[in-house]
Amino acid sequence: MIRFLIALSAAFALSPAWACSCMSLPETGFVHADLKRLPANARGTLFLTQNEKLQPSAFLIVSDAQPGPLKAQLSWPDLGVKGKPQRYLARVEPVGGFKPGAHYTIRYMNSKEQWRYPAQTDFFIDAEPIKLDGANHQLVLDGAPARELLQLETNSGMCSSQQPAVVQNFHYELPAAYQQYKSAIYYRSDFNGDPVPHYFGALCGDRAFGATALGGTREIVYNRCETPKGRVSIQGWAGLLEVEDHARPTNILNTDLGAAQGQSCTAFGILKEALATHDRQRISNAACHISGAEYAGRNSGLPDDSPTAAEMLDFARNSAATPRACVLAAMTTVLTHMPEPAEQLGQGLGQIIGSDLASTDVAKVDTALIELTQSVGYISMNGWREKNEAQQIQAMLEPTLPALVKLLMSSHTMPRIAPSPEHPAPMMSLGELIGHAGDKANRYIPELLAAAESSPAISDDAIIALSMIAPNDPRVQALQRTIKPLTLDSTQP
Image (cartoon, rainbow, N blue to C red):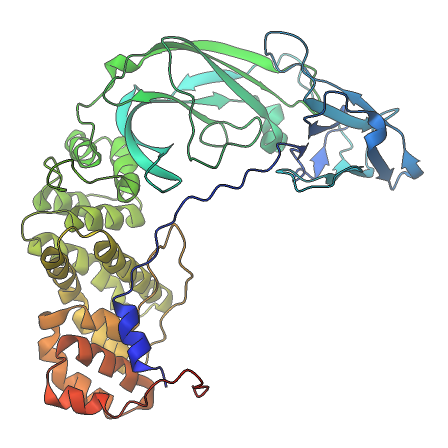
């Protein structure tokens, strides 16, 4: 039997904050160790080093095409950086080069500590070379600069948060020949003109060597939201350095961050402005990121430019272009921080989730239960006033109660997920979810009392719900006295 006291206390437990704890590792090792194929004209695999006097004898190379260890040789590709030739990114290959169709394992033999990248790599050599004659990379602007939420490092105790910023998105377009090796492309973007900050997406997590700011081919240039000065020219460099001796320059783009769309520099204001523009990209950015923002105002702790309940419900009805998870997260975040009674928005959110709770598709039901738990957990962890918090949760849960009680009566098994940055709130039982509805669940007391005295499979959940809904009811107190007390040496289920 699930111990009642444990379950009840879990109903009020808050998920711990995802605090930032940095553990920096040396930027050394084979940077593309996950690349398991190289073209026939590869000049080596890339090894990042902090030793300017790195020698070929530090590497052991073996192959299924030749017996015994193979002698290594090093070369140093040009990364397009002005100044003396670089000596931190080496290409390692056997003397005489690679043989098409062969498999190679290359290991750095003097590794005595943990590095960011592996000390060993292995790969096959393709039968055909990659043909790069005349290949040119292009930079393309993704719309105009705009005020939006951007993941940035923070000193608030977390590694990062979503912060208002003026952002110009752009991306690299690569020739078709590069596509099969795109995970190994080296990128570097140079910005000239007005000074702009270097992008750090988290306090601890710097990007991988040669990667773009947002991963893949996606890049940004940004500035602080309140001071968006920035006439900037952008030039990129890209190359498959396992093959090419030089990173190739791109075309040059120009942008003016001072001409950014929008006026607001708060998370809620950015969402409100985006909803008014009907710009799908801006709406998705704001909706998908607002729950990770640092949202408290300097004075009251409440936003003064938040979307209204009517605006959020209209968004929910016309949100086909926005991922469902983002719609629910945005609705939950706005609901949590509304200063006025939030009955309308709470019930609208509950109706969206509740419709899936009533589905005959078990996977859809389980997803809805996770969504509901995360919404309740977010409000519990971030609500600014206890009275508002309870009212918001109860308003949201009321439309879901018929489905939740039905699931409890059918002994539905709750899905299990471990807390994570994506799902910070611990999963709740059906009894806890029903219990959080408080007075809104009073009409279900007779059903829950009957369930508590019937099948052992549902009695625990029923008692949990009753103890949260009507803790002073004599019938509930009598049921609680039937629960076997928990002891430290208890081993019975």
